[in-house]
Image (cartoon, rainbow, N blue to C red):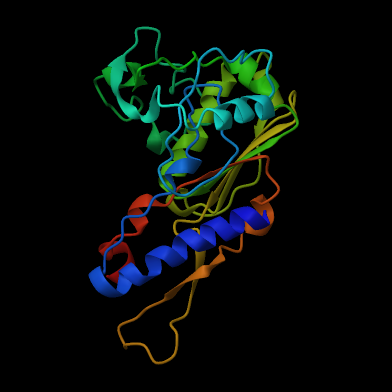
Length: 264
């Protein structure tokens, strides 16, 4: 956890000087994105767009998460492809789950339930240039994540990823009653914690709301009167004590580092 803390702290310090010059920041923890449509779970972290590729000769069914991560890391300098370069393509086998049947989709966030007429968007998948990602298999992924915790830390984008992953994994569960919600608190749009436990696999998928990923406190003495709060770029959000021991961490912050969010 110390190494992860240091990397986040370093990344935030690097952008702190930008605040004073252009009063605008676009900042995203791109390398901590979970590829929810595949069985690859990336457990190494960096904070700039990585240049790595995935060789699909990895045996995902027989390999552990650690083995998969090691294979991916060993191919970082391979120029055969970039998972971030590609396009959305139609796949008739999609969607991977029916949102109207998933018990963990919030009613306010269900497109079909709220009258969206088209469904084509649900049949799009990400296609990297130069190679194909393995097909997502809920049963295999559940077995890989047995006895583990997966924690999403960030804003509503992370929450949507959290919800989607749960619904995808539900397709591999035979006993729906074995999956249940953990305690949650707060209003729908500002809920601080969400959790779902797959008891048959002793797997917990969690979401912690932390839009900036760092502590937000009172203004520093001596600053202009219009300042409402201060972001501590040298201090992670206090909820870190709850999620720091999870085996898989997924961060996002993105659009919160903009003039409207920071200075208005």
